[in-house]
Length: 324
Image 1 (tube, rainbow, N blue to C red):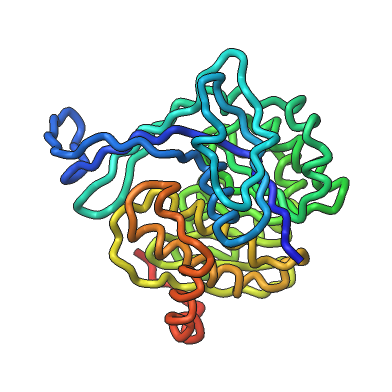
Image 2 (cartoon, rainbow, N blue to C red):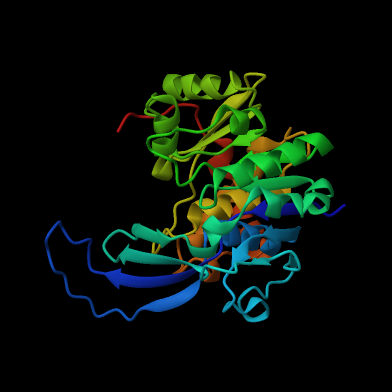
């Protein structure tokens, strides 16, 4: 049976420029790169990743009056009939600088219509959430809208996945949000901001996970960049899923691809977390080898080929990390 995955989140128009390396403070650095525009935003990226892995996906997002939904969101398996329009804001925009030296990126975001999403908007889409298997949300939209969506999901037994990015550096996350979250997926920096515990070794990763379990969260994934991703559930099952080596061209949307792809493989009780993460890792390895956000996200058939070639990598993984 095909899963229905709803993503509540951001839609941005990405403006990408490549530079030889990141400039230092006060430095002017020339580049021969043209500015490339493409669709992005953490919400839309995650939706596209799920849709390209053949799940029925619904996006709950808000765009400006100028946005062409048919042109910019035309993706197989993606339902766009619940996209909302802001009366006062333009579509969100992201300004992305990519280092040709490392493939890493620096992103500055203008929220625009994304920050105009309200709990009332979410309530109008209660039926959509009710009829989903999973709902995924991030923090490029107002937290009160995410809380409302997760409360609705909990009422109907829909599983909630929180990607706490970008992480509010000073305020942390409301208890009401954490208490309505089934799975949380921070990276190593975000989890430190939340818990105050470094993610630098296996023992500390378990301590991080226990912090979330105390809030009632049942499943924890902490992504660790080149060191792979850590998982643990409230029953104590844990481990490390290593990365698949690939030539890194552009890391934009790698994390979003991971989350969207993983959800398409996840059982409703989340009992197959490790296997779902392995599929997601294969998807992300393809994303980082290509330019752009949405254009870099792979199809299911591409992911399955890479996954098949790299099962030995996962089967031989050890549950240990080296401090860096």
